[in-house]
Length: 317
Image (cartoon, rainbow, N blue to C red; front, side, top):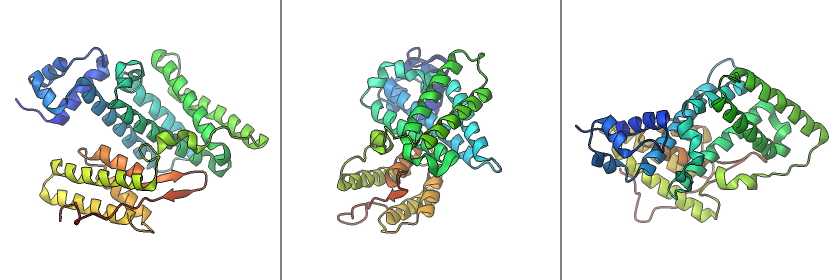
């Protein structure tokens, strides 16, 4: 019997979700898939590599739900803010062995896992920043990063209480309680003209992961991502014509980010379309982060030019 890489990931996700990383072996996953242990190693060199893929896909699924929530019609900013707190709690409760308890595992120190963890942390920080900006608007910009830090700490602490004392706290009541206290905190900060402690530079390592250095190095990161995505497109299982369409879209994005005045809405729409393909989803998310480095303190977007190819385009014609 042969199985696909994604089937192995689905099996591993279910087993890690139910019993945790330490309790599951590659043999367990192989038996669940009905294949030999060696067949799992054809896809993943180690259990750590497999867990990293599961961890990444679980977060991708979470952010899919975040995007769905953002598109719900008729929600006020307050209602959407409350719903995103409840969504986070529910999802992280469901996948606590994968998304929460990994912090206590040896894999936390794995050199292959650390960059993934930084990427995920950056996405969460950016999402929390966007939620707070949407909720409170311009008045929080002077102390935005202090508020992001405090909000994240509050979410983490209450999440742990909810996970381990689930019957004690109502998700909806907890979300309303958190928002109520944030309102008081924001009102005090604005009224007292608080001097911020944290600035964006404190979060640079995460929100701009891999792009902290010179412009030339950033361009190298983008170039590498475009190359990797183009190569990975060959793995998309939906036919040659569809792969050609995806590749044309990728080339469009690449041309736009090289443009001094890129079409931001079309770039974002194109990235969203490409992100629907599971085989390239993680790479597209990395590309989105690399292309659009947002500075909420002054509203600027830095669009990175990709270096010109030497010897012609690396992409298929």
